[in-house]
Each structure stands twice: as C-alpha cells, then as structure tokens.
Length: 131
Image 1 (tube, rainbow, N blue to C red):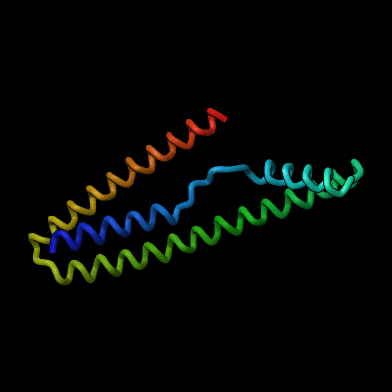
Image 2: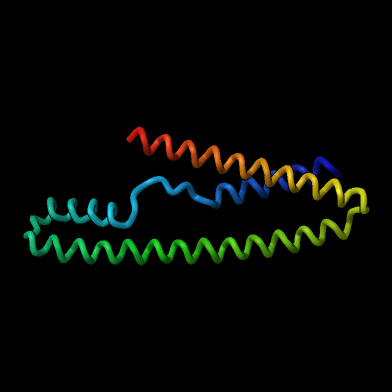
C-alpha cells in the first residue's frame, strides 16, 4: 500500500513538474523584434513599415503571453482541486497512523519538488549566462 501511495505521489509531482514549462526563450519584445527583422528581410519593408509592424508584432506577443498566463493559472487551479479531492479520498481509506505517515510523505515530496525546481532555476540561469 505504501509503495502505491509513494508511486502515486511521485507520479503526480512529476506530471505537475512537466506541466510547468521551462520558460527558456525570449520575452515578448525579443520575439517581436525577431519576427519583425525576419519580415523586414523577406518583404523588403520600409523603415516606416518596420516601425508599424514591430508594434503590431509586439502587441500580439504580449497578448499571447497574457493568454498563456491565464491558461496556466486556470490549469493550476484545476490541478489543485483534483489534488484536494484525491487527498480527501485517500485519507478516508487510511488509518490514523497511516494518515500521519501519508502527511510525512507528502511533506518530503514537497521538499523534494522545491529542491528540484530550485535546481532547475539555477540551471536555467547558468544557461542564460552562457549565452
């Protein structure tokens, strides 16, 4: 039973970790600049066109970022609700002693995930510094 619980918790943490995409890349301004430069080159845009198109590209990139953040927040809320329901159902099956051990397991899982996220952040920072 313990092995199943440990596996289930580990699997859920792994899935939630994958769901949180590593934002490795460019911000809205950089993406707009890149696409605008590509368009300038391919379409032989005038300077006036470049200014207007860059503004259009920037606005679209910012809107996409906002949408991604909204979707991510909504997904996070749904996952939290699922986890809360799952947790309550599991606790209904466990004895008091098992519940205490279950809580310890969850705490260890949270600590491990925090460390993992911290390590990933440090790794991403190092990669950015190298570029």
